[in-house]
Length: 294
Image (cartoon, rainbow, N blue to C red; front, side):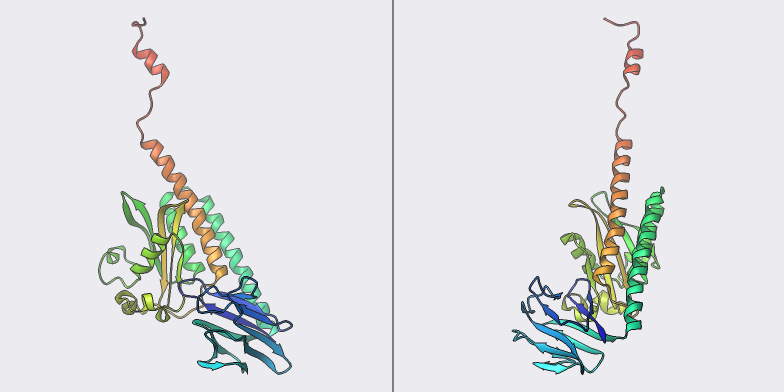
């Protein structure tokens, strides 16, 4: 029986792998591992998952920080079914899949890629700036399966909210806003996407008052970049349990945001040129000096 492993890395998209029952899966920090987990608590060759006639088994490979099955440290053990594994400090969800379930998972991935293409095509066809911003935000919320969000644009030396989804813009500036300001600040400062799939498990953000008040389950923020220049950012979150935001999801989300950033940068450049004082035309100079040529 095949299986799926979902690894939750701190402030990163989840790493999803479909495990082939016909071959072992090597897990570790080394680049050549089948499941590469770039985290300091994970050993280079940390553990192995293997399927035999009795089902799936987990074997620790003398790792420094240990391998765990449902909270219990193990050297080698059978995995009875759905289980939570931990390699060092990285939590993973193990789920056996039938052939039908594996085929359904593959179809869902293909459908998400098609959805991303539809969103990108819609953005490319936009000619109105406000509609582009709203469509970008809607695409991020739908692809990430988030309930609400907002889009920021860099203006006049700061950031302004230029689009919202299922949020009252007037409440964003108040203390009653239950989103995570810290995630937005980090995404902009580090110029990279920040994703929290298990918000309560992340010590950096779980204790923030806004996160506690909002009961957030998942959130993300993607900066809109033109090279190193920050054009803005897109934030989305969800209070309901849902599917994890994976590397594939992030690939699709970044493609949408990169296309939007190109559109915004081009619009900004065109608007900047339009706001410049028009240079004098040579014909106008000639007309102004008619009869006074030297």
